Length: 96
Image 1 (cartoon, one colour):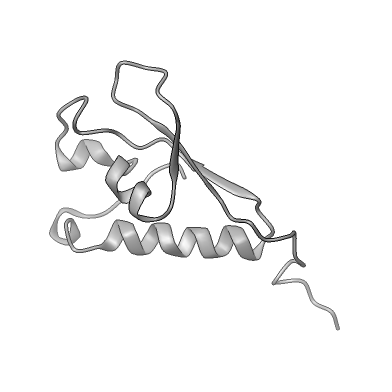
Image 2 (image 1 turned 135 degrees about the vertical axis):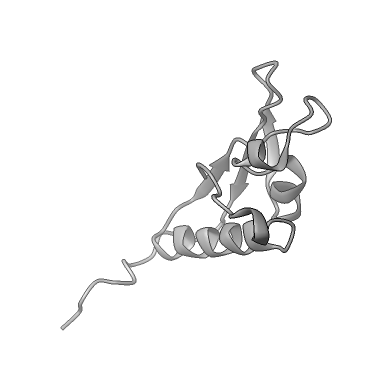
């Protein structure tokens, strides 16, 4: 999960959560085994909401992600969610 671009008037209204949920559904539909994100941890480094474009640890944790590593002092955390379904067919593939 690279970044969430949410305009200021819509921040704090669950838009990032909805984007993350949709991205997980798409990844699973295309057969992904796992998804990773590198959110910031506000407890490690204070950020403005504009600087939290990669999401927060709390957002990813609520979506079922687990911490994998903390390799930098910048407050970035590598988190992963196993999707746990076998690889499926391409949902957009025309069987016709």
